[in-house]
View 1 (cartoon, rainbow, N blue to C red):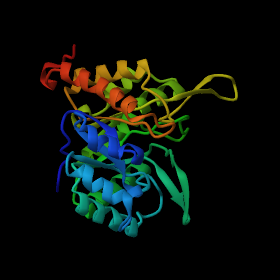
View 2: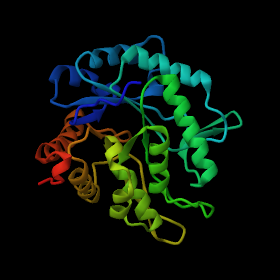
View 3: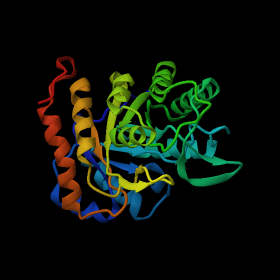
View 4: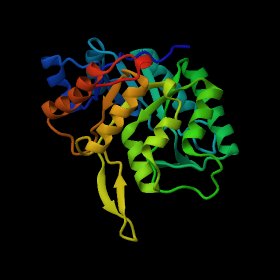
Length: 287
């Protein structure tokens, strides 16, 4: 089984409008990441562009529709398409979300939350193991952004993720923005949440922007919209993570209101500067 092997450097989400800029400028980034489902086609410009990028940079595939948290069995046809994509592009990493997106044959264009209890844990572990066996690679599981907690949950989210990692051997995709958004919305302590995660299993980190809104009671609500630069609070949490993990492959996500290439590149290079200042994990110190 292939393990995640991204370089301990900063990367960026690849957007079609930026491909020619990337190929022309050859930025000093460690890797590029794409949403797997956008490339499940036999021909056309998307796979052609990806082949050109893949010839120059390591690639991370990020799935959004596998539904590892769903109550229904995994879609075998979707798994087959993922396996073919992985075989074709040989990514250094494949990741998916701790979420569900479909029910009764209907697909919902969202990443939906799930309760953290024993039954859900067994189901998610089974799905992760099935996916890893079919795809023949170690999966990185992403912590979700969330806006509420289920009353029926008997496990904390960090404990749930730790159990999945321990039982399946999967890795963790640590989305620092999601951690900040979720803890802010639920009234949790983001630092305590991060400290409770199995940080030794982190194979990739995500950074992104969020939007501010308010709930029905007028309280601040953070929305994980990937539509702006990384917030100062998220950068601070990222530094805290690096002080524990040492340098880890870090992706800058910007999926909505996508800026010009130079702005996205410069935001990713901020992460690269922090990675360059970071000592190996055993020293647990980032300047």
